[in-house]
Length: 120
Image (cartoon, rainbow, N blue to C red; front, side, top):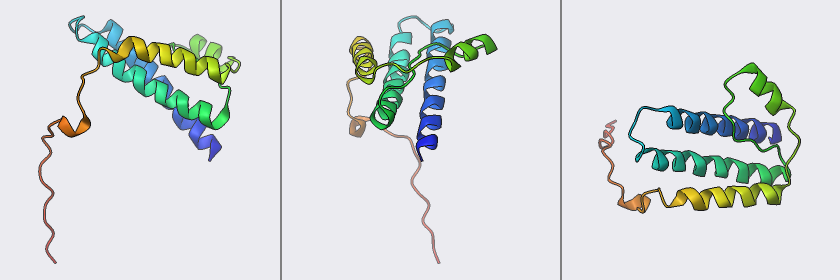
């Protein structure tokens, strides 16, 4: 179980870091980028919260793994203190939270089609 949590969370961190790097390089309007990055930052913070809750001190990185040399550097990282990791995440969330829409999920309109009825 621990191996699955570790692998899944670090895969999520890797995807979030790649998304942030992609958003920064994207040819979309600059005023749209902070909200998109904020979503990835929030999700990455959740992954690190799960990791630090499960394992305590864990390796912490925010770079995009876009080459073998970056992967090798990340693979050699030591563990960062869990409290320091969470403090870093909280500060980052405070920076980006202002860019997220202030809506409850119950207020978001969905366009999903109704479920088909099954007849037996």
